[in-house]
Image (cartoon, rainbow, N blue to C red; front, side):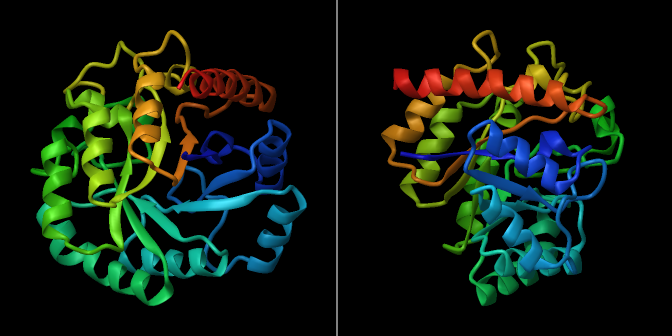
Length: 283
């Protein structure tokens, strides 16, 4: 069975200790930490006092199950591989970060070599070919698309085939697959067969999303959290994770929480948590 976790991402407006404390109060015991470009969460960074971070996690009974590092260059990624190692994290997550051909030929190889040296795996998120910018939550950037990214199931298969490295796998992001008209369960099964499913986001998308128009704006935060009236049926997807024997992290995720009061972040996560637990009971 998968390990149920939470992203620290919805708390990107709040300090690390507040975020960890609130997730622990909600009952979570595993968290994916973020060291990304703003306005994404950037709770931990290279150069931070690792002993203090580990002591904080221990105080709240929290285990770090991943480190997300979107929006960094090669040197920044390598520094975060080393940060993951020092925090006892076995998986670092980032997306294509460049046109596919540049990603596999130039961007990824030195990071993969550093990850192998440090005992850290790389989980590449399947991601639309729309580049990240600080204004991503307002949509747009459709005119800046890369020629190719790791967005469709075919591109996921291509990456797995061309980067034949057991230390490089996929962080599966269901909304990006939904936008591309793909089956989440099919992607889960393909990756699980090849032992390349390293991380899974429990993540939804606003049904009002318009492909080719809205870019990376997947809707308000509450529409991105797993919910009974959501776009995706998480009983099906989580059931597929169980069926294929996936034992890695599956974490509740959403963007779209900028400016939310702390009480709203907690309340919306609590509702998503209750729904996910209902799904788990049903499977």
